Image (cartoon, rainbow over all chains, first blue to last red; front, side, top):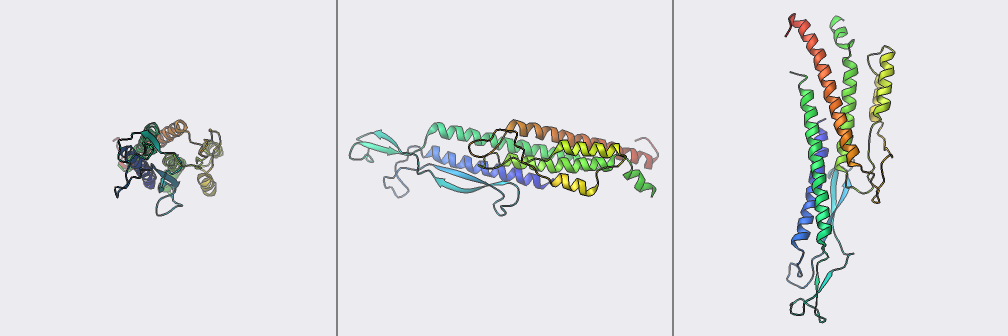
Length: 135
Length: 132
């Protein structure tokens, strides 16, 4: 019964990491340069989930297997000839972050987080009910 | 032995089996909930209807619970129910189904705990020779 709490907490951790990557994407929505200051638009990242615990893939639970770069979707392009990062045609390449997608994902992650919290509450109530057998 | 009869002839062994079953099922429900966003994950569940049928036929036959190996078989028989929609990512999640299963399972668990408490309290009362 107690290890059921571990399953729920693995779900909590995974969803929180997913929410972290979403926050990172939204924060870098307009970042046109990389860490070295070179014109290189930010690429959106996403968390890949897999079943099992981090240290033991056969144990029940969930974990984030990797954080991957989204190099499939296209960069947004904006005509801004005055921008120092604009190309010869006057277009600036902006990160491939879509606010709508990020928002929907954030909503989904926070709801899934809540679902795991609820499961934890239920587990706790079941455990404390069992403990009352002793009293 | 007398005390052994007192503890094991009542509904207690039966209730204990129900508790073990609901605990095992709750674990699977928690696992389903944690894996709600994993592509290709299939929901897991135990067959509660079959368990209840087996239990009621055991009671009708005058037994105090399922035989140990029957019980082990049914609590370890993890199934992948296919009655919900399979999404494009290969996961057949149904959060509503999960939530209601979880609530029903936990209520069942807590109800059985109360029944068991009642039984133990009766024993206590008999041992203390007074109404608590």
